[in-house]
Length: 73
Length: 180
Image (cartoon, rainbow over all chains, first blue to last red; front, side, top):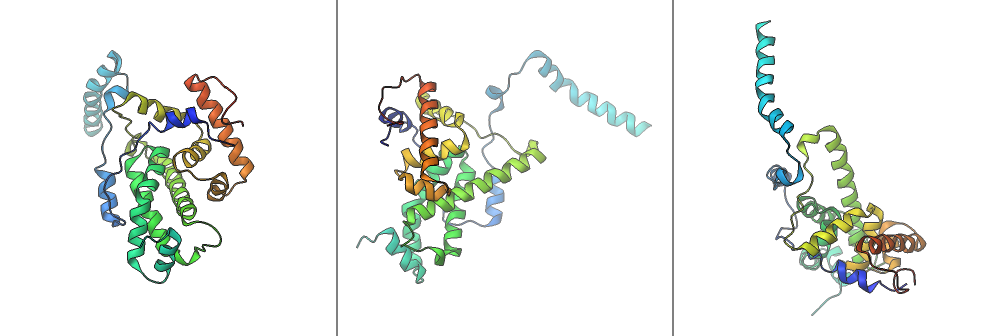
């Protein structure tokens, strides 16, 4: 079974740059790496429409009101 | 003097730490690329490579050059480590979804993005065999040993993956390649 050369040519365009990292790292370093990992930029991934925008703006107000009502009662 | 991987491993088994460093220098990049192309997650890939070498140190005496090449042994450890990490992440992301973000897929080249997307469209099992076969030049026997499956299963996974990729890329079957 020989390799499919056309597919191989396409696959070879996926080049990965390897960052410099040591052979071992402490648990603390791993946790900090995980915490400060590059965050995805959310806008292209999520479709923001009018309803979602209104929700994002109104939700904190509603949440505060709900907390206030709970505290008063 | 250029020692083979197996000779370096033998030296390491006898306590030579420099041989381990040399092995790390040789295999850090291929192992990282294997895990990264599979998961497209930079942090997970680095952790998996570091854990692979940690396990290699812990289980150094389990390696026997008569049973197979060191390259196969390292990829086997890396694969198992990666799968364990993926499963663990899936479990945690179900429990605490707000803590886990999908990996960022930002590529500067359109071709590269297409290949990334194409690889993601394959099943986990198909992706693994394709990566090992096309990027790391491992034989089907080696892949079977790494994944602990039969050579027939490796062949069938490669065949199905190739068919799927050809369909996705709109390449017509021309008689050569996967099925021959």
